[in-house]
Image: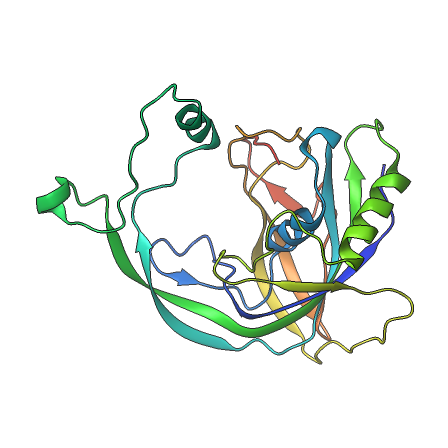
Length: 245
């Protein structure tokens, strides 16, 4: 069961929608990916117990893609899982430091500390994103969910700051409705090839222990508009390992 279509205009100074084939350096797709767009809607309204996900329908690109080269210090070590963090908070396990500096001589390993990486990011991005709520099970009133999202979006509320690919690249948003002036998409046709669709299996229930499940689709931009196929469409190629949204 699906809800009504909502539209957000989103913009920011920088963005990085990293191509998964880049193993070391970050190189952004020229436009936002469906998974990054879903993350913006999740930041505004999402409840784990409600069993729904945001289905992105369309992305309208309002500013021409413009790349910028950045160098950033990144921590080599991985952030702990939510399960580990709760164990630390409840004092069931001893907390371990996440080293932001140090070398092999001081830490005994070169897997910790920080390293400087090149990032090919986007600058001055702006999109209009259309999406709707897709219920996995008809256990909630879809109209109530739509109203809650619309109310939060109108008042600028979010559970955390939306971002464009990396948390240090904040995304700003405002809802677009029938009374809002329409902004034209850029006049650009582009075959983007195979693009990352999502990193989780959207058909499975939300929880904290899902494994990655990569999906891709052939993205095409026509006059600045990218039509996003439904997750369960044959146009979306999925791997065999399932994860959770």
